[in-house]
Structures are given as C-alpha cells and as structure tokens.
Amino acid sequence: MADFNDIMLDLKRKLYKPVYFLHGEEAYFIDEISDYIESHVLDETEKGFNQTVLYGRDTDLGSIISLAKGFPMMGEQQVVIVKEAQTLKELSKSTGDGDEVKEKKSSSDKNPLIAYLENPQPSTVLVFCFKYKKLDARSTLAKTIAKKAVLFESKKLYDNKIPDWINGYLKDKKYSINPKAAALLAEYLGNDLSKIANEVGKLCLNLPENSEISVDHIQQNIGISKDFNVFELQDALGKKDVLKANRIAQYFAANPKENPLIMTNASLYNYFQKILLYHFVPDKSRGSVASALGMNPFFVEGYERAARNYNTAKLKSIFGYLHECDARSKGVDNVSVEDGDLLKEMVFKILH
Image 1 (cartoon, rainbow, N blue to C red):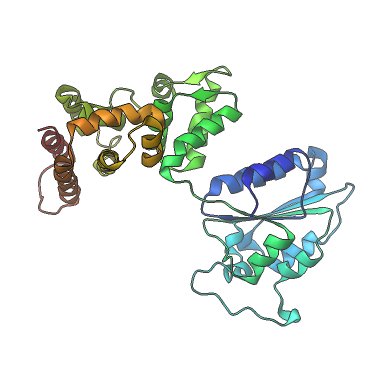
Image 2 (cartoon, one colour):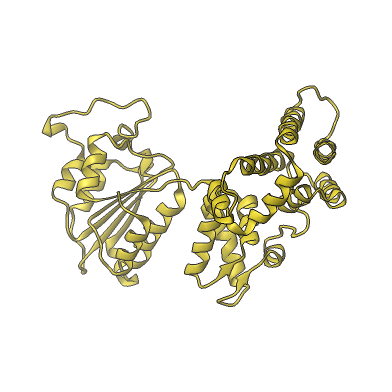
C-alpha cells in the first residue's frame, strides 16, 4: 500500500506512474495528490491539449480507458483525472458494501481497468479519485491495482492524532504551533482535514514565516475565544476553580450556537474519561501517561492535578451527570429546561 508522503515525494521529483488509484474515507489526502498532479505534471501550454478532467457520474470506465490509451498531442505526456470515481458503476462492485457481484473469470468480461493495467500507456498519467469509501481489498480489482499501479488508501485520522497532524502541516509551511493552540484547533474544527487546512492557511497568511501560532493568534484570526472555550472549561473543572467554570458555563449558555451542548458534553466526557484512565496507569511518569492517554506530554500535569481532585468514585458520579445532561438535552424527562441551564446545573454537580 502506497504512503502519502512517498507519493508526494516522487511527484515532486517528477517520477510519475501510469495509474494512481486514490480511495478511502478522508478526502483531503486524495485531493492533495490529484491537485498536485493536475497542477504540476504539465505546463500551462500543454494542459489545453493533454489534460482531461472527467467526473464518474458523466462517463464510464470504457470511455476512460479509451482516452488513456491515446497519445499526447505536441507533448510527451497526457493526464487523465477521474473525479468522483466512486460513482462509476463498474467500480462500485468492488467496494465490499454488501452488493458485490461475483467476479467474472472470462477474459472477454474482464474489467476494462484490469485489462488496461496489464499494459498501461506509458505516456499517460491516469488518476482515479474514489472518495468516501474504499475498494474491497479482497477483490481482483484491488489486488491488481496494488500489484500493477499506485493504490493509496486515504484513512480518516483518529481525533487524538489531529494535533500532531496540525504540527506536521505547519512545519511543512515553516511555522510552528504551541500544544494548547493545536489542541484548541482540533477540538473546534474536528477531524475534517480540509477545513483545518483552510483555517490554518488563514493564520499563515497573517503571520510571517517561522512564527509560532498561539491561542491569541487563533482568537484574532479564526474567532475562537481564548478565554471561553471547552479547554478552559476543562481546566477550570480540573482545578475546581468554581468562579472560572461558572463564568464559562454562563458564556456558553449565552452563546449556544457557538458552543452547542452536545459538543461540550462530548468533550467533557472524553476529558473525564482520561482522568479515570490516569488513575489506572501503573507508571505515572510523564512519558508513560502521555502515551497511555494519547496526548502531548505538555498536558499531563493538568491531568495529574485533576486526578487528585476527582477520585474514581466521584468520576463514576460525573459520568452519570453527563449521561443525564445528554438525555435531558434530547428531551428525555425534560420539557422546559434550556441547554444553557442544563450545562450550568451539570457544572455545579461536577464541582460539588
């Protein structure tokens, strides 16, 4: 299975393969590879004659392969990019979605792409962008692509990997970011890498190279409050800072669209779950705790403090409060209490 960084390195070295099949749930990496090929393999004067972008819903595999077999006009290479390739009927049989058709063994019925892979046109760079799903690795098509071409699976990153990804993304752009700022971005932007890249790009436009991005920069350029956010709420609860926790809860109640209860509740659940896990980590050294809890060592001290304030019995009660708050926010045993009041009530119960 091809690696994203290896593919990009080869592309930047102008080492092109005849066929790239990019599939998987994370659209960002697929777009990065296909966009680079679309922008860099041919120069602007060649693109008009030798670059074709197709959409799976508007074509079929036979037409794509026929185009790929052609020769470039007044140039050495041609590029054929198939976007939304997951909508091609001939490929949907190999996704493993439960409707897979028994693969035909007759050579006359062979998938046109499988036949093409046996003898691809060396002057063509053919790219399939097969998003939001993946090929069944057991299918003949997937096995053949893996053997004869570049098969890349773009996987969703786990939430706890997002801050590290942000670090790496910024490092490539000659910036850095402090751990708290990276965690804040990950929490508020989720695991949509395209969205994160877009917002981080705005930061970079407003800061000189080699800058370290801070929480202040995020507040100024993205609009996430540095004082009233879920991390500050977690910190206040961990320290049992009653005044600060209630101020943040009050702010969230006054700004429910920017701070939806369902998201706050989920973040607090993950926070207290890590405090519970901390109690059971045998080696309490910073490195071991960071590894066990899947976090940057920068944050371990805060969990050490929180674990002193919340024993396992109290944590069991807190999970009950969180569950109750979640249910009531969805209308269970609740007909009139607003989300903001539910949050303030839950914060009170956690702290007392």
